[in-house]
Amino acid sequence: MIRGMDTERVQALAQQMAEVADRVRAIETRLTAHLATTEWVGADRTRFESDWSAQHVVALRQAADVLDEAAHVATDNVREQESASA
Image (tube, rainbow, N blue to C red; front, side):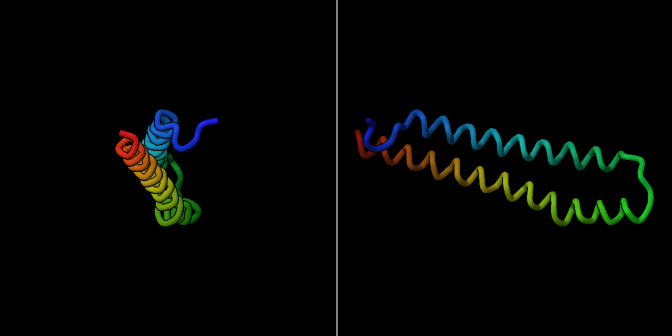
């Protein structure tokens, strides 16, 4: 049984969180670009685009930011653990 932190695993987790954050941002960008080039005219499109920009894009960006923040906290904790153990 490990007591304390398995720094290698926590660092790997932090890396995975940062990579997922990057993927979420890339997906949002691709979807937004795809929506811009989709042939669709009318009130439903206007409403959808408005919802997309005001709600969904914001939520995706916030999710990516939260993942990045968690990755930074985990990385900082690894550094602190390694410093304390040195």
